[in-house]
Every structure is written in structure tokens, then in C-alpha cells.
Length: 180
Ligand code: ZN
Image 1 (spheres, rainbow, N blue to C red):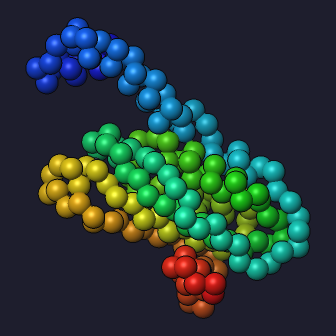
Image 2: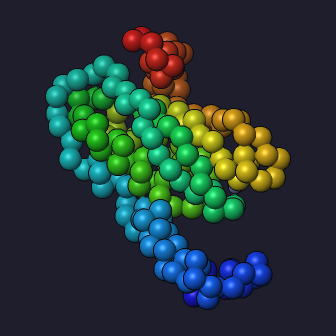
């Protein structure tokens, strides 16, 4: 019903053939795109393994799609997530699920970045963690100042990633593609 109102407001005819099922399609798409509102992404970090591993673990280039909460337009990109366990580790797919859980809700990139970092700190209590997100915001590329190609980069460093320059440098070099 709300999408029908939008179509009327922009001067369209919601009953013409091409638009008739659009409200239904958008409702289904939104259920998927905002599914993160109905979960606590930290649940994905519940199953941990004690491997005694105390070196840096990084999952690089996690693709994600989110919607900016100011325009409800997509911003898409990749996230890099790293942490130094204090013994307890989590499956790599869980890190991707964590990013997805926070991405699938109305968001701003800055908050998405820190929510992922804070969740990791809370759930795994690692020595530290780092999250870097690179994304293109369609609210900036297709409207407004229209600057296609501009990429926004945000980072959140916690614990040793914040306190030890060498740790941060090691993480950033892995994120940029080097072995380390
Ligand atoms: Zn926006």
C-alpha cells in the first residue's frame, strides 16, 4: 500500500500493466534487504572453537549490499574483517554473516563499520580487531552531486589494532592485498 502511494505521488498510474505488481515486488525485496532488522547478527558468533591460535586472522573482500538510511538507496562494496584471537576463533563464513546481518537494515557506512567491530569484540573478546569497508553509494553517484567512482572508505580499530601501530600496519597491508 505504501509503494502504491509513492507511485501516485510521483505522478504514475499504479494500475498500468508494468506497475501493477511493483508494490508486491518491492515488499518482497524489502523483506530480504531489511532482514537484518529481525536478527541479532551476534548470534552468528556464538559457535566458537578453541584452537589456541593467537595470530591475526583476516577475511578480505566480503561483498555486501546495504541501503543508506537517508535515501533508502543501495550502497555496495566490500568489507575486510580481521582479529587476533585469544584462543577462541570463529568460522570464516560467520564473519561474512555478521557483516550481512548489520548491512541488511537501513544503515550509514560509519555505523555498519563500528557495529561489526564492536560485535566481534563483545562476542570473541579477542586481543583486538579491525574492520575496513569500501563502498560506492548510489545516493551520491546517481543523484545529488553525481560523482560516479567515488568510493567511501571507513575503518574501525579496536584493542591491539588501535593501540599497536605495527598490528594496524600488518592488518592494512593484508587488506591491501599483500601477504603481510
Ligand atoms: Zn544516502
